[in-house]
Image (cartoon, rainbow, N blue to C red; front, side):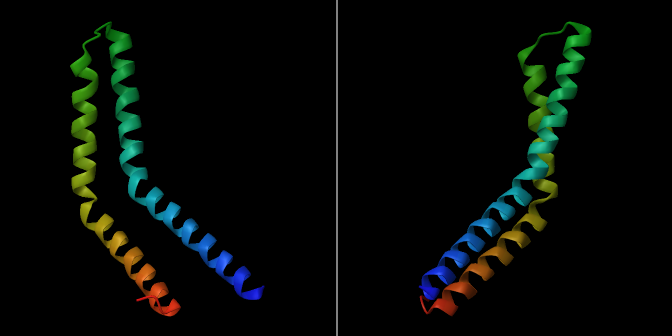
Length: 95
């Protein structure tokens, strides 16, 4: 019974770590997309310009810029997460 509880806790810890890593990787990109989208929508509402490409292109460029700027740190976070997972697999004897 104790072994099952320990396994359940480790699985919950893995899930928490997975969600935190996904949040750290996707959060900045989503926040920049949200801010640029709101700014462009506000500009369109104030100027009565309802061009579809005007709402898409700035958001697309901002998201691409953030992804390129944060690519190296994101790969570092992914590397650390993968190493953590492989160490846990090794501890379980599943490697």
